[in-house]
Length: 435
Image 1 (cartoon, rainbow, N blue to C red):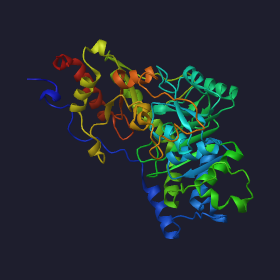
Image 2: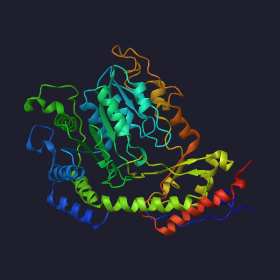
Image 3: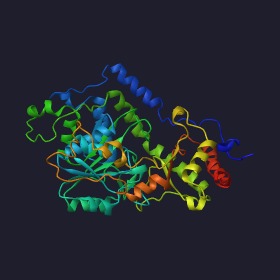
């Protein structure tokens, strides 16, 4: 009889893992306070004292700015909206190019398309998975307007090199720090390393308010443009006396008072959450260290890591089986998380498909059916999205990278022991998976 559950053997564990839920009494009381106030949102899309939102939103912005030591924090309804505001604030538009990562959530790249700019994909680093500075520099042209860097998996990007490249070419750096709250690079918080930073408060992030995002910057003009884009800019610019109207077509990206109240309490818990998160990762990595086909993630010198997911490289040459076969076997040994039953066991292969291989980029179809903005008369280039343009990214996706969430703070030492036992069991009996 087989030892492995995938072949009919007994599972390492059947009892579900405890839910990751950092919402407590403090958040409940904050929500009740808002409900009793009767003010669930206080934004007005006209030039008025409430143009900048209600008391909870503005308090959150002050507290976030103080925590991250920045001049401006702007609350929005999602990190996606934050990226849209950030790209718009740079003045990007038709004919411009924005360098983006292929290995991230889709909005980090589509933020360029919102303003009819062209996403240009640079490759990622072999060891850290963030944008490779050499590849970024190779992609710069006279049309480049900005660089959207991503602190992927929770590790800050190479700020020293990429910021230097941006300065040489007069480019804006937008830092997608959705996965990296509360960690630092050489003493500065992720999200504050570029000209604009964007954080996420989505439900599966380190801290969350269900949905929500925060933008930060030290630049007064960029901050005001992003506040305008957040809240119907076109309706207020005349009364504000603003004559610079580039990208002043506004949206409704406003955060509610309830979300802000929850986020304020969550921010107070961030340091404790991050400490527990890192302790779990450290514990699990020690348990997995004796499995030779697994290569633990490296941390950039001078940086901390938030480990939104735990990225592990897989060596099929050592294991003698494919990554997919190994991961399927580990998955069969373990249960799901409570409250995330429909998502299965939180381990997978490759993270996300390189974005440029998605249908949108392959067919170059965004607005209408004529190929706009890729074939617009003000863009005279042929941007490349074919397979092979980012070989390191493709290698991680196709064969090497495993990502999992089986180390979150809700897991106890005993839970982590079960996770490690599943990996160790599959390694020990991998011979059952050959052929």
